[in-house]
Length: 399
Image 1 (cartoon, helix red, strand yellow):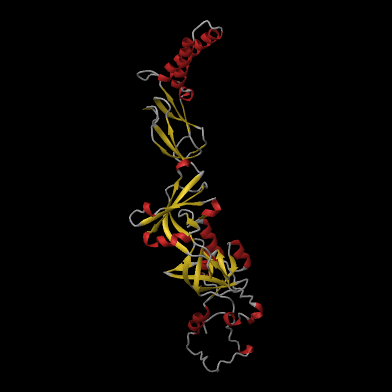
Image 2: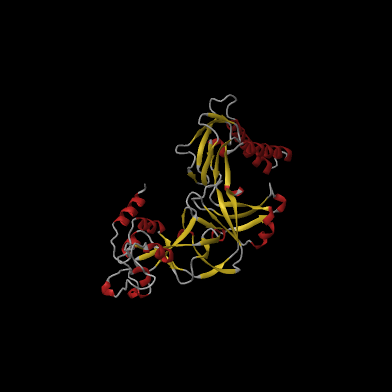
């Protein structure tokens, strides 16, 4: 049980029964005032309101549900927020599955530039963040059979450079032939091509900035020139691949954007908000009855390449609908509810039927109408307040 959950439970248990401040008890009097005091002129003999032995609460609850109390101060402490229901543009949505991958230009292999014994640099491990050019490890050829070929190349380069420096002034004074001068230049260029200053240093560096996702060698292992010792996935850009059933291929012409939900955090990513663009759709690339639709977008630090995601392919806003944030929906045993805010103290649970979702908002087909106020954040706190049995004063249904 988390600290936050314990805090909410404790807060709900400490609620006082203060009653609802419902606009002089006129607008919400039917919901909140069930006092049967004779002093208030409540006639117990009128038709249809026979009290002996009846369970009055069943009919009343069927009409307007139990009222839940939560003081404004407590609601603020627990992060309860509400918003007014309204009709607004809601576009077409195609919900499919997909995967987020690193773009080809954002991933890089870390390769040894010379042969020798490889050793990782201190602090390098899977998950380490590195910068482009940062040292990942080093290669040393000392003690390896055949020696260090780069060291041999350096000796030959130095010799070729010395010969070119000697013959150049002689050529300028025409004391040597052009053939002799050209031969010296060619020898120097060959030696220069054979020698690698980075390889001579033994440093193995990251080609891009990002996060190390694989370590492909072990410290102390002999590696050849070009051996991949690690992989870095850069955060510069990613690719979203959405797999659309081939039978829905005709709908892809209306897709203008895409939203995904990260399964490990619940955070939503809207492609257009991340400099995303639709990279392409190709029926020729269809596999197993699915057509891939790809988007490229700028990365953020919390994205894990290879993550399977729910993808909502969005079309233009062609209609209006009542919708609420996903955070407003409460699911209980397969049924869906929202909490209506009646006044500053009181709430009630309303059943709703749902339509399409764009990954951020959910269309409500029935159960709400414009002008109602519903809880959009902190629904857990309201749920626990309901479970604590806090019925507002004057709303007791035991007669």
